[in-house]
Amino acid sequence: MIQRIQTLYLVGVLVLSILSFCFPLAVFETDKYAPSEYNLLPENLPADTTELPQNTIAWNAIFFPVASGILALVAIFLYKNRPLQMRITAFGFLFATIYVGMLLLWIISAQETALASQQIQVTKTIYGVSTYLPMAQVLLFILAQRAIKKDEKLVRDSERIR
Image (cartoon, rainbow, N blue to C red; front, side, top):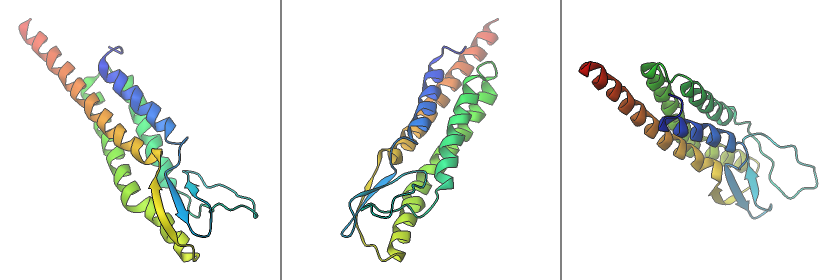
């Protein structure tokens, strides 16, 4: 049924996917510029600004939250087919886990490298809210998977009694 607890977990994943586009991934502090945010989409800054330009388009930082959100949305409406719902949730978990790894190991460091190639020394990197949201998505996918398995076990046990 659609009013099960796994639906709330999957709606939470969907909301976190949307929120990841509202907050910065990282804030870079330098000696030359004011603290600058690194968002998911590139920004066009005027020439007289004191903020760092975003040099890389993070297509993978766009793809993975969208894919996780779509998979969560699809899984919500597959409540009648629990085995398929479990597989879709597992794929969502996989996408969210890969995205967390890419964020921490590649995306933010690629921006730091791009800034270093422009002779801009980054003194401090502060991870933004959008860096932590995929970690919460991973947790919600795990909880949804456990709830779906629990429902499937309950249905199988009730069919065995009949």
